[in-house]
Length: 552
Ligand code: GLN
Image 1 (cartoon, helix red, strand yellow):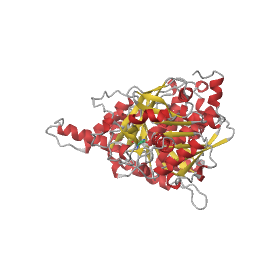
Image 2 (cartoon, rainbow, N blue to C red; image 1 turned 180 degrees about the vertical axis):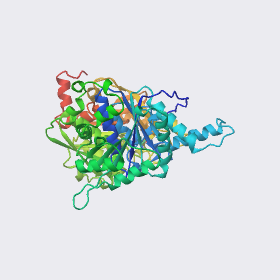
Image 3 (cartoon, rainbow, N blue to C red; image 1 turned 90 degrees about the vertical axis):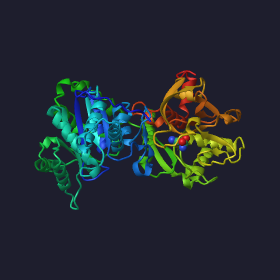
Image 4 (cartoon, protein in one colour; image 1 turned 120 degrees about the vertical axis):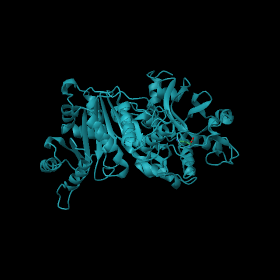
């Protein structure tokens, strides 16, 4: 697990803070609203970072089930965090660290450790001030060195778990200059049966916020459409903000259009004025415009990718969906991702994959649906369907090859079948004596050496790559020679660890032990995903190699 800094903070750390809370209900897209605001401020030339507060008692998201909480996102330092951090990294094009995800588990663990070591000798340890001080310290430290720090409080105002954070923010605002702090509250504005935009839920939620001493500066109404001028006036009047501090965040088809929507309403301008930053912003005609250009780019044609996983929930594979989208933006096609339930792909019956252009088998843990994942590997390999296997998808490609090409009957990963006669995938040596589950996998960014002249080399256009990891198992070194002699190419390695596999005589059969999806950004799509689409769009990588555009 990444280590945490526990230094005394310098109160002048960080310059401007935007606190984002949510009301009425969760799942409103508060994180996207916050990340979009950040995107616009960074377009205006500011160095923006973000902090996500998760009020649960888990120390990190690593031990949570994706059904409950969506994907576990992995940071470069190995932090296993909430998927919202992925949105911040993608929208702001920054790399964050574990310190940027504050959880109640982390805060309490630290305060209790301090108590045990005698730091508060003689005192009663309490939520105020000990817990709230630790929360404020963490926010200031994460903001250090940046112009603007966006702090999103997970959950909804009024949740018991969130109270200590809102109190910490109240104190924070009290300690800082008014001009350095901005409170944004995101609420739901539903339609009534007769088509009227209703402001009462927003009024109630703001009332709740004010009862704990927080007055929002900006209100963002999530609504099917833009808020009518009368709706904005009503919200302004009842919630005590100027009418031009009320913004709409209407439903959009593509979340990458949210920054454009809020920019059209002048949210960035308002934030900069309120924080006294207009003088420092780039003049309007010099602001970075690449985001708008990128996300409004015309695409031609459509590609359908089957994502063979066990969770029928988009959030469980959000970074993969986004990576495919980024690769689509780069190659100029629309990508539709169809979820194929791995439990439905029984051996020898992969009809669900008949009409797709490519197959992705994502990461995962445990045995449910594993036969379907192996079947997807077989189908893609034998039918020349472009394939990308990520982590577990890489491991199952090895298992399938061992079984069907090497004839190693019953070959498997020791994770799934402890008694397999051929554990082609086995526990990492350093994992044998571990007892704790939290934060103990092989995590975070590690460099991989890529063999010159391989497909991986063409894909990365480099002889190394640094990608993020999250696994306990790997290719068993005892089987490497046999697998290679039978035609499987391990084109990426870290010492004796197999990191990338590929096949000759196949349009694109690639597996990665790492998770390239965590480094993909709009405008900087992940190479293995671009390679997948290139292969579908007529093996463009091959063409680029032939034309000498990519050196191998
Ligand atoms: N369960 C496998 C392992 O631990 C794969 C992990 C993953 O896909 N992230 O090695």
